[in-house]
Amino acid sequence: MMSCKPTLTLGYNLDAWNSYRVKIPVAIDLSISKNCHMVITGISGGGKSTAVQGYVAKMKQAQPEGEMYFSDYKGDDAFKYMRDCPRYRSFKRTLENLDIVYDRLNARLSGEDETRHPITLIWDEYMANILALQGEDKDKKPADRLAPFVMSKVSEILLMGRSMAVRNVNICQRPDAIAFPTGSRLNYNVSVILGSAVRSIYEMLMPDHMEQLKGRQFGIGEGAALLQGSELHFIKVGLPQDSSRMRELCVSALS
Image (cartoon, rainbow, N blue to C red; front, side, top):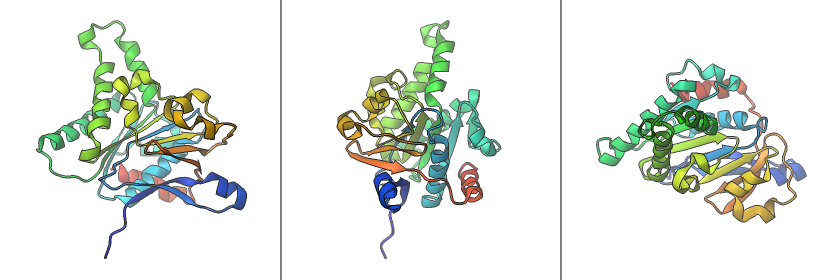
């Protein structure tokens, strides 16, 4: 019997929903061989937090053997039910999750760890976290500055994680290059932009698709998803049918 590939539904085809109220899933392959890194962006209130919770729950269902670590820099109230989970960390402690995942990646690269179940670092408000670190670094000597080391570790996860089943899911309002040195932003296999985003965000993540995006207007939970750098979809992320079950799965994923 052939086993089904683990998949993650990002949302439903927006045009099919608007025209016919038909739910056609837009999904990605979560297989270890694919191991997609994801970046989820958009202005505040665009639906990112709701989407992320749904994605975490779905990933837990698709890959129950996986490990997930959630770094929530601003301590968003949308995630407050996660705060007692052992793999959830906020504000100054977000870097602890990065260190854990980075060390696991290097253990796999060295051969010390031969396991290949997926390990996922989800980082909400990554951009704000990096900007705060850069502000703290201003009065420090170059050797003592923290932000460059953090960005270097994230870049290494993006570059080397795919073959080692270590995945990064990054959530931010703007994925500016200042937080992604040496072009590491290009290593995201899946880019999702939700809500009424500004043009510059599309230009950062979907520069080859500006003509297709021209004239498009998106509401809360609606937007564009670019898969593997070439496949553009317009999606609608619905509200969870069972919020309690979704939260239950998120807590399990981070425990």
